[in-house]
Length: 141
Image (cartoon, rainbow, N blue to C red; front, side, top):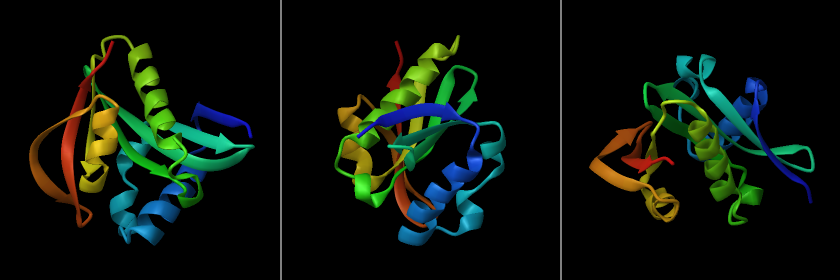
């Protein structure tokens, strides 16, 4: 098994994965899942033996890297791929000059996952696409 996690310009493949996870599985309306931030975001794609299995995006705002649209295909969940995908996002954010924080909006059931990766929750619970979320932040470097 050969795992690769890299920055990609293949937005179509990333959107297909996100459609599978967010729209089909979680019933998020497509018009809420895909937005204009995709045009300027840095996209990360994870593949196993050349087959796309996970993706995330990073949108940079001044000194903050906002990680979002993190998804892993159902067949790969529980393998550690999600943590490796977040690690790749953090590495990409750290490589940018002047970025010193990573932020994300975590689905409530994923709070523990992100806490293990060094993120801290803050602020109230809110609905995003009908799913409860909470903001989380982590210092870089």
